[in-house]
Length: 212
Image 1 (cartoon, rainbow, N blue to C red):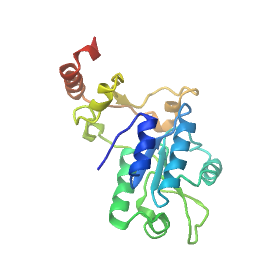
Image 2: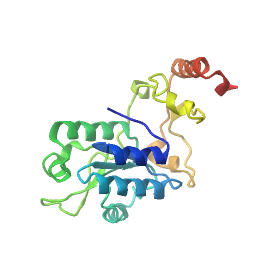
Image 3: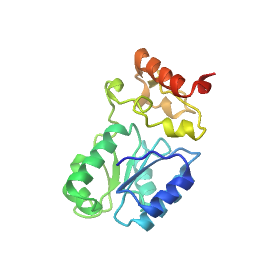
C-alpha cells in the first residue's frame, strides 16, 4: 500500500496508528524542521522503519559536509539529493526483497542503492558516507506515470489544495540563487503536450472551479 500525505497532522496520526515500512519526506528550506521532526517521531515509533529524506536542501557538492549532515541526523537512513523516482524504487525493491534491517541492507546489498547516500553501519566502510551513481535521471520523463491521471492527487483537491503541474525538468540558466542552477539540471526534459492536456482535462472534469 502507498499513501501520499500533505497534512502534517494526518501524517502524525498515520505514524501513530500504523507506521509504514518506509517513510519518504521532502527536504526544502521551508519544510526542513517539520520533516526532520516527523522522521524523528517515525523512528521513535517504528525502530526498524526505513526513513528516506530527499530534496535540494543538502550539501551534495561538499561531501565532507554531506557526511556530517547525515551523521548529525541518525534518524535518516537514506538521502536522495536529486530526482527521487529511481532511487526510491530501488530502496523499496530492496526492502521488499531483503527486509528492513538497515544494517543488513547496506552491508550486504549496499551496491543496489544507486542515487542515494547513506552512512554505513558496519564492515570496512562503517561510519563513512556511501553514495553510488548519485544524480540518476529518468531519460524519458514521460515514462513516469502521471499522478493526476492516476488519481493520486484527487484527495488533495478535495481538501482544498490548488493544482500544480510539472511541465518540464531542467533549466539552461545557471542562477546561483536557485538550486536548479546546478549543472545537473542544465539539460531540459519536457512532458508531452498531450499528457499535460489530459491532466488539465482530468481536473476540469472533476473540479471545474479549480481552473477558473
